[in-house]
Length: 426
Image (cartoon, rainbow, N blue to C red):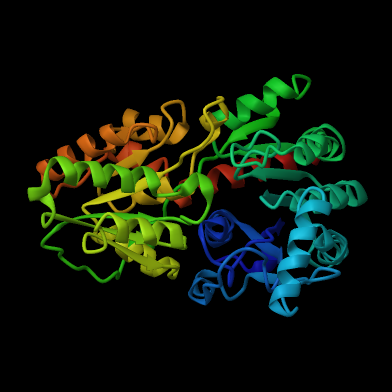
């Protein structure tokens, strides 16, 4: 087996990385896991206490022992401040820092990155967002060293459907933040997006960008994640939603309304199914369950580790995905890593998402389950009844369709991109 010294090194700028948890760390974690198989040694530049996500220390077990991980703290962090002060400063950061509250991390990260480039013989730079400040680190290092740079967009930037559209944010988009995005798109040697919709948006807004510079590497699932999970048989038909339900566009309200309508029309079904809502939620959502006598049917589990979330998914009869985004076309870019992770469970998917979204069309085109608009709780109720009546089934995708979402296969695409850039430079 080749030694580390014989492998090519890539600097991976990933602000979200274990022990940080949640969906946002999975893409970088899996790239770091599988790149060594393709003779690329990841040198990860990240932070110790990432803002805005839970800690999931179990994920650190997936990081190879010989993987270099450099953890850099921002110039100023609110993590250790007294809670009320931390909340106030965090809000001020969100307003004043452009493009995001992670901006104080850019300078020390760029300084540490330059040192790693010199020490490790880095041949390529990879940065991933959000947070988009990570790309500013990549830009600085590209400018200082000339090393090929790949900018990876897990979500869109200015066109992100989740983006706040207040006057302040629209002004930022037309001034400094718009300039930042333009610099990244123009100066990166390769731009990776997770969906064709994001790629098309960049091509539309930056027509001078060469098409060959933009490639799509979608999110996916790792079969290893579903091994050795505890299996539990639920007598009742079981729906599972794993999501950050406290976010406006991820609210389970369309599902809750659908359940309310389903039971008002079919009261005999009250004891025939159950729903687990796994992830952060709001008091208003809890109050809705009490008001409509749904607590016995719908259980709110709260935030759990990634492995625990996968266990819920693996034991579900139907995994539910919800995205209630804007109806102005921006939702077409929505391709959540969560819905692709669901594929690994083998259970049917109920996608409650705008009909123009990539997630809606993925479920529909690959026959992964049912897709319905969040604007129609009546249709959600009908669809749920149909899925319950079909009984406990599994989705059996052909191997060629399944493999395209395997994290190892997707990492090969990244490795090929890095090889192309290094050879081109030589």
